[in-house]
Length: 245
Ligand code: F6R
Image (cartoon, rainbow, N blue to C red; front, side, top):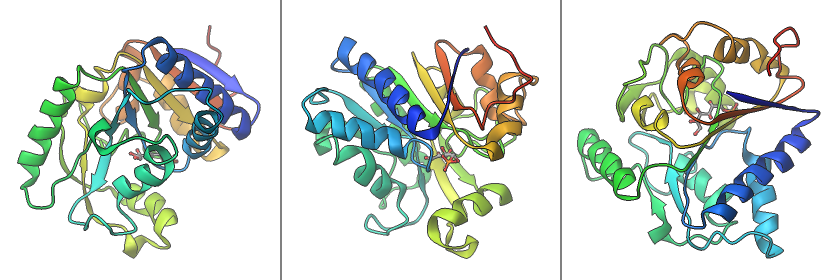
């Protein structure tokens, strides 16, 4: 794992955007998996600003959805695709044919997941996965316990995820109880991963992610063994007693 610690959330946004811009610059047809959640929002806004200034060219990238609540209509304000569209797809001017979605209201969950895996494979796999760290160590909605080979699937949200997602939607009872998530076996195969982590409330789970035993109880800890993982954390999130070189 590469670790980069920055002074502030604002710096996390610009350094994170530098990272993504460099990747897109070196591979204009890159496939980029995109988390929602609060942490990468400033990074995406920074990318959008760079796009408007003509500093990056995302015309050939493919954007891959990470997860989605199950059973919501397309236009439900809680849809994670809707969030991804507002924060990443629209600001970067991406067209529908540049997207790999994890949805399909009319289909059963297994079919949705199988088609998603095929679409990711057909796109050539994931060049860069932009991930946030769940308060319980989840990646996407791979809730603990999730093994390294956990597939793309329908999951039930843990109590902790329902609590943390309640902050997005104005209360826990507004949080859907089931979701579809890209599997650990998809995420761990990404050629590059950028894990963005911000705030003191993430410090303990970040310690367990980078320094603890590799365990299905902290799904993010499997990133210790994955290729080309960069952990980009602000100072509040970084456990001071953990040193890295
Ligand atoms: C979002 C997602 C989640 C979040 C994680 C961190 O699509 O899948 O795994 O990345 O819960 O969320 P924030 O960034 O809000 O702390």
